[in-house]
Amino acid sequence: ATSGTSRDAPGLPAPRLEEVIVTVSDLARIEAVFREVLGWEVVFRGALRDDEAAGWDLPAGTRGRQVLMGSPSSRY
Image 1 (spheres, rainbow, N blue to C red):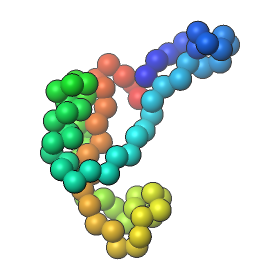
Image 2 (cartoon, helix red, strand yellow; image 1 turned 90 degrees about the vertical axis):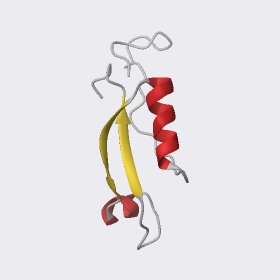
Image 3 (cartoon, helix red, strand yellow; image 1 turned 45 degrees about the horizontal axis):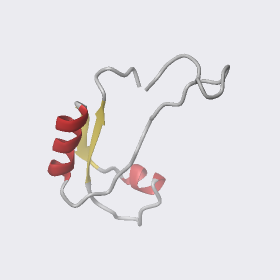
């Protein structure tokens, strides 16, 4: 995440990454990549809730696990 104003569009907020949802077959492996390459930390780990699955337009009854990760240097 960045703060301040954009260099490309003065006066507009600088762009920032807020959320990316990635479906993977090996959650532990991709978690290790984000941790080792990007230096991100686990913020939350748990089961996918029904309301989250519905919000992502997944079929009713979809089950899964999720990991929320973030950069320790970001306030987002």
